[in-house]
Image 1: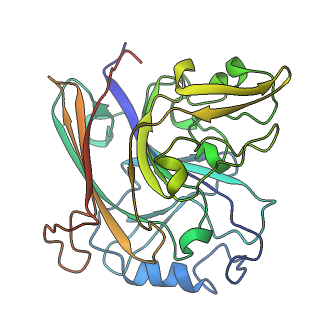
Image 2: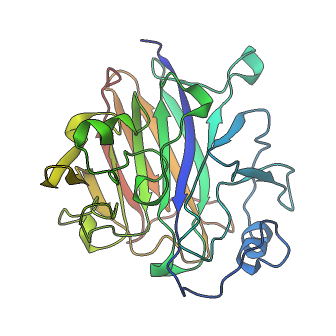
Length: 290
């Protein structure tokens, strides 16, 4: 298998009906939270030569920050209704050496980025995921929105685990930043992934293999199945969607096949390293064969 994988950030967003003030604007004008996000964005780098936009309906676009052009990827827009479920992505570009941004799993690698989840707190959308994938779909790889976060399988049809697995991004590993607990259950609801003890308690970080059958538990009965998700090493997070930028550091150890992440490890104003109760960190084993 090719050791150079595509890496990207995805999201699936669905807002609660009646949550905050509905804003349908698709650009910065008229969207106060988006204006705030852009105005307070930390120093970044141009993304247009490194990443390709992807997704079912082209929800994702690049935005200029006050400091650097095309340095912010708006994965999904604000969504005032439950009718419009979004899933978008940015994926590594391939091609010439200078523009090849693939993740080489045979080499130790350090990555950092800033994430912004909006300002709606418990009424936020579904969240984001950092994903490594070697799918045949390449930069067009995308799963459904909602609890699937654009990467996990879709369990709405109720036909069984094979259908759930086949609808996920294949040959992938995902580190999810889940802002909404999906634990209601029930056939056709697509609302049962977060039924384990840690993840059912609130917002969390966890990981897993979206295209692997053992990532899912089948619940319900014949032709009315629904699925829960087996989260690897879940960690609670107080509130992603607090209207602030949050830093993420990732460190890949190729020899040990381990990914270490640190969330909230830098100050948004100074960029300096920070510590505190809200810093979440862990080391996760990854099998590239999956």
